[in-house]
Length: 274
Image (cartoon, rainbow, N blue to C red; front, top):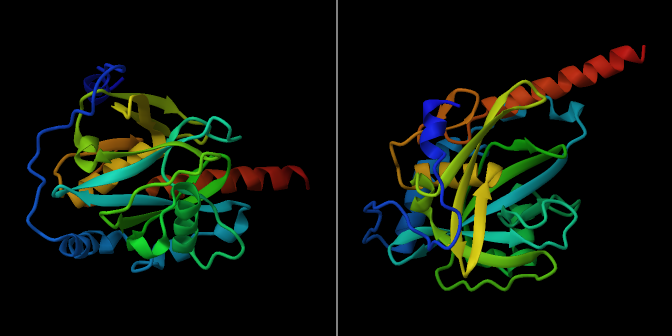
């Protein structure tokens, strides 16, 4: 385990309120001004504005399900909070884990934004008209063979969630700055079957009396959103030895590596059939 991983490994898991690092993140700016500020920050990472690399990827050569998640930010008491869900134990996949609202793309969906907003309405009662979209960002391939596009959106400050109990057991909010804190965190590193080292970050909190563990892809997206929105100079490592900072958010290298490995495996399988 690296020195950085050892530093993060100390964790107390139960019975703790949400305690966050002390940072001056409040602002006198209005919610609308904050939305425009976020658009200015995240514009250079938005694949709609910078499609060149993404459009060159051989995605048509793979049978990947397309999905989107909404990263819903809500401006409360002068700072952004992220809205998260605890998935129902009744679900077949990823039951009982912390997640963003989201799901697979339907044939009737126009684009990644449509998918994310439709799923958010179905899961937590968030109407699309109550969301200001900030951007659509580089996807990752998440098991089982699903291409997930993150969409950041700012939610009206008066939004109150109405969770779909068939899909969601809890909707909760955490100040975005929590994901720049090293308190009650752990990092687990492992060598994956696609020849890469992943560093899985866990953030342990107690929300509405329930212990929650925000980890994996969800945690990484929370961290990246926090790094950008709060313009923090901190860095995190999620993949191999690549440091993620406010200057290289939603970095495509991990996705491109996984895609390359899948294509290699597919080619070997096809060659063996000849």
